[in-house]
Image (cartoon, rainbow, N blue to C red; front, side, top):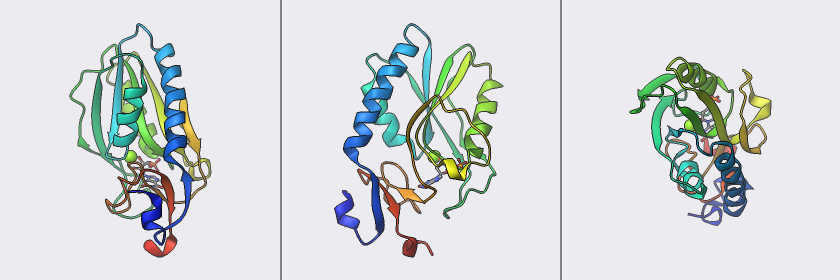
Length: 183
Ligand code: XMP
Ligand code: MG
């Protein structure tokens, strides 16, 4: 699905498929250098990070294990609730491992700051964050994000894993959802 197919449902395309892939290659090269020879574990946060994880992990130049965690801080609406709930926990033991959290987007930052604390308490050797997108104007807590794709305006976005009520995840670009779609 491409943005052209849903033009009446979006305001504009923010990041194209090509821009995403260029950025992922750049960050993957940096991450591969930084973690060379270390016990790196990628942890994707379901469901939004599925596309980022798929493309980012394949852009890395060596084999790396991955695990997944599902948390929810959102209902089907567009605002963060601030309440984080584990829906699916990790299968891996984090003791002594270098964890890189792979996230689709940092909005208020509440989800990630909770996850960072949670992972550190499990004895990881290090925990860093790679987020494809961040909305600086929406920040409620400060989260250190070592690897960042794009800063975007404080608008609700969809595509490339991001959904509105489970729709649009398979859109190839990242676009702003038209307000008439949810108001
Ligand atoms: P917080 O506010 O805790 O939110 O940083 C992080 C999670 O909320 C979801 N999120 C969005 N999902 N479009 C979406 O489809 C958005 O614009 C958006 N903003 C936040 C997302 O799951 C993220 O992991
Ligand atoms: Mg998410």
